[in-house]
Amino acid sequence: MDFDQDLLKVAEHLRHRDLAADKIRRVAWHFGVPLGHGFEAHNIVDLPVDLILKVVGHLMAKNCTSLDRRVEDMNIVMVPAFQLWLANMPKLIDLTAFMSFCPRNHKYHFFKEALTEISKFVPQVEELLWEVHEPTRNVDLIFVDSEILEALGKLTQLKTLSIREKFKFRLRDLINLGNQLPNLQSLSIVLDDNANLLLKPNLHDPVGIQLKLSLRKLKVLIFELQNVGDEIYFYLFFVLHLRSAHIIDYFEEENIIYRNHFETMVEDTTTRPKYVNSLNLRTFKVIVDYTRLFDYCHLRCPHVQHLEIKRIGSGEANEPETKLEIQFNEHYLLFDHIMSMTLAHLPPTVVLRFLRKYGPVLKTLCIKNVRSTNASFNPSPHEILTMCPRLEKLVLKGGLYSDQMEPIASFTQLKELELIFSRMELFPVTATLHAPNLEKLTLGARSDVTLISNLAALIAEKKILQRSGGSSLFGPVELLG
Image (cartoon, rainbow, N blue to C red; front, side, top):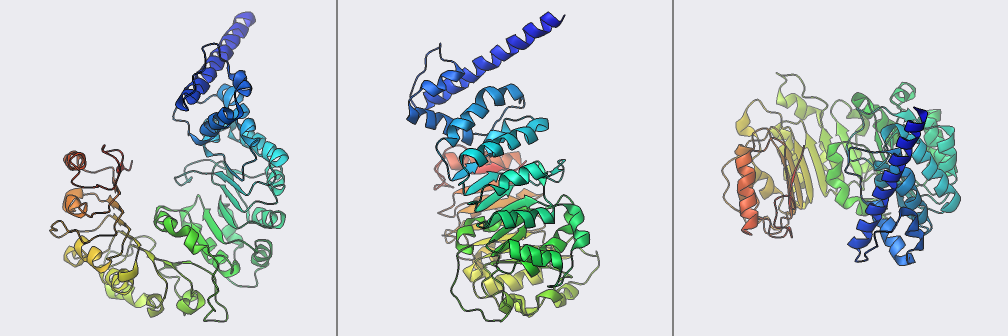
């Protein structure tokens, strides 16, 4: 019985070796180099150096699409390819594709192994990434341990660290990282939910003081919690203590709206502060019921470029809209450099106030779930686009009602449009898509099949999305699941 089991293991190992060789042959063929049928995975080291770099670079960049993920694939193909790739001494190491081939219950082992290799052979790496594109709230995470932190601490030239898979960090881990990584400028991680019990909203909190001293050069902090309701505590805590940071935010869908302006936002400015206690923030988040902290916000945060005004939840069903308006400080309308804005769960009167003020200069805009007991007061797409003539990206989600729109060619700057409605037929999609520079359309999963078919036909006829560069529906049009 044991002999039969051993034979099966050998056969399985040989099968994976053959699959590995096939994978390398396909990648080499992609670069115009055919490899013979006698080629085996270990023969990759005998290939010309330029071809080796192309093959392993391709393997390190392409995510796994198979549901069948095995340790053998990692050991036979991905780990050796990763080691060869490190020989090129990359300044940026993105482990996302590499780790996507790994079975979930082995991720810790292979990440630790990869990190050990990096700390030994490429300690001068400047960017280390392990990304996910969706929140990790439904995924079991473990605390980062001393071995992982020790390996990370050896990467003393690291400027960017993004680990949003497998691990979560405590506040003391952030302090230790900051002390070990003096050049750290950008950090994206999942935090321990229980830490909010220790947070104090005052400048004399000892944890906050340590954090400020250890993360002196930090410009960007994007964090995530598995408990949604606690983000505001962390946000206020970090804003108070990381006073040199340019971007402090928690990971959520709306954050993507200003990603196109990231480089501009993290640039240093020589503009003289208007207020003695001013912050360097380029993004500013206003949460209803937490507004008192931000009196004179336009003076405290004179460099803000992205403004987010949102309400947590939908409020009381019969709550007067005027009550919500009163809660907003006029100082929110006094920023000088706004180019991007997110408005969520607000009454239309408040939405219109912000659009009238900032609409003429906006490049990106997200409006989510306008709250109104009277649908006729909701801003129409025509009003939004008319008030925001320079928009390059527009995201509209839920709760909007449309007027009748004729095709308008004056939306000359619009490049991206994202529409997530429960009743897509109420929105004049094809009219808006005549914008001459539109490159991409993203629709919600509930989009009508007839609408999608009509769009596919219009794209094929080159009547809309002419700048997309693709003739098929799945190029310029993306469907969200």
